[in-house]
Image (tube, rainbow, N blue to C red):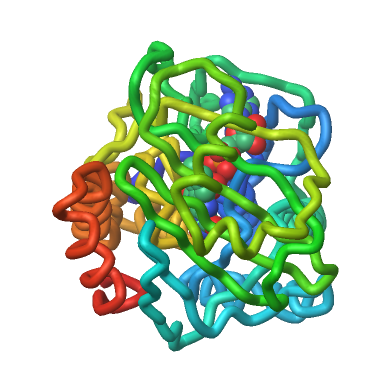
Length: 343
Ligand SMILES: Cc1cc2nc3c(=O)[nH]c(=O)nc-3n(C[C@H](O)[C@H](O)[C@H](O)COP(=O)(O)OP(=O)(O)OC[C@H]3O[C@@H](n4cnc5c(N)ncnc54)[C@H](O)[C@@H]3O)c2cc1C
């Protein structure tokens, strides 16, 4: 007797519905389509556009792009290597963190347009402007929940917690490919500069809901001399964007039978380590491995836990330290020494 895989349509092509065209959804759709699945990808946005975060690609993200055969496209699109991270505390003290292997700076919308083109070429049926509140696996198929951090049925109530914010700037004092992280108790600001001279300024802040992002930005300038110095002549080139409170988690979200959670929809980690896009891009290859196992859901959960469980734990620890003055410098000292990427 032959075993029936999820998505087995008894001779026809196996079908998958993917919800969300972020890096996790695109990686899943691309991997499944290349493996012969019939894939529909539903995205609530009408078209790709600028995003809040995710312009730094860590070595793991680059490895997945290499496996997809997309690194030439990424280089042609202007991806620039990032060979070290400069980490500052709120007194301006610097820790230098070499990145070996190097990471890369690439605007998030460029990454998604490269992945989107590859997915369409592989035959994915891309449906823009189609929000889905539930993922039901198609008859005899699978569902992939890739709808990001708020993919739960009950988004967290606005209140106190960690909020992300960003804007693009020109004329920042930084070289293309330079990444710097500026920490203070209760938050940090990260800066990443692209070859066209634009810099993504992106922060995380423990705060209450409400209040303009401009105030958070001004407060960050006051608290962080290293940040203020780099922004001395800078001009803002985009609106402020913000999100939160972020629903950080240590374990994988539970989903109905036949539905696989991936990327931030599986669990939201901490941005400090620059690994979210790597986790998202790894979604497709991990899904394919799990689908080849006798119990795909259990295998997916096990592979995911083995790959990310420990890192999410370290991220949570650093996040707690970030909120307490005496632990902040110790955490930054550790961040300069932890292996990168974290295994
Ligand atoms: C402040 C901040 C900075 C960060 N910086 C970095 C960084 O530099 N490098 C890095 O590696 N990681 C970074 N991260 C983390 C990284 O951005 C995420 O881990 C990554 O984007 C997760 O990808 P995803 O595809 O799972 O989710 P998302 O990128 O959130 O994509 C989800 C997609 O689903 C769509 N969607 C949502 N709901 C629905 C619905 N109901 N129906 C259809 N579509 C839906 C959304 O529109 C979106 O397109 C950062 C995070 C934060 C908060």
